[in-house]
Amino acid sequence: MKNIVVLVSGGGTNLQALIDAEHSGEIKGGKITCVISSKEGVFALERAAKAGIPSRVIPRKEYPDSLSYSKAILAALNEEKADLVILAGFMTILDECVTSAYAYKIINVHPALIPSFCGEGFYGLKVHEAALAYGVKVSGATIHFVNEKADAGAIILQGTVDVLRDDTPEVLQKRIMENVEWKLLPKAASLFCQDKIDIIDGKAYIKD
Image (cartoon, rainbow, N blue to C red; front, side, top):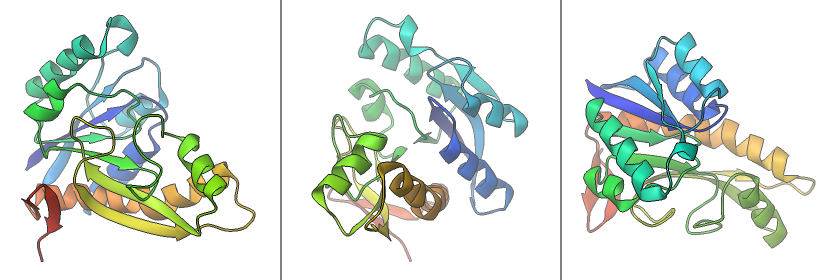
């Protein structure tokens, strides 16, 4: 059984999707063993507590720079014996000391179809604002491995939704979360925990 550590910064809707999927048996071969938050008092911590999952708070504001903060996160991941790290609305870019130590063991969800509307500065509603401004007809979410560059790791899964004429960024965000993010993130976690993801030439392939 692989240890899954989830990193959060806010409300924890993706964390809840993972908790629900674990309880329903969708995540095979893995168990959420710890939730780590970059902020105190966020609702994601209440979700963890309600589910009986241990949590830790490592406040970003207490560290002078990304490297020192990343080293603290790395120490915590090592202490928790993390096999898989999931970034679920975690709003801090991790230094290469973490991504190299956990290469192809950290997954993130990005609310667009990479390589569109991704990279530094594209997060939250900004992603959906950009997609609507461009006039795309479909959008979605990407589950990908995390490397040293923002949103540049190997793609594991992608899913789409139609973009409708009257969509606002908030409406599109909700549609993508409910129809793609909350379904594919647990699926990717389960695939990883069952050793069903192959990495070949830097690309991720799902085993049959």
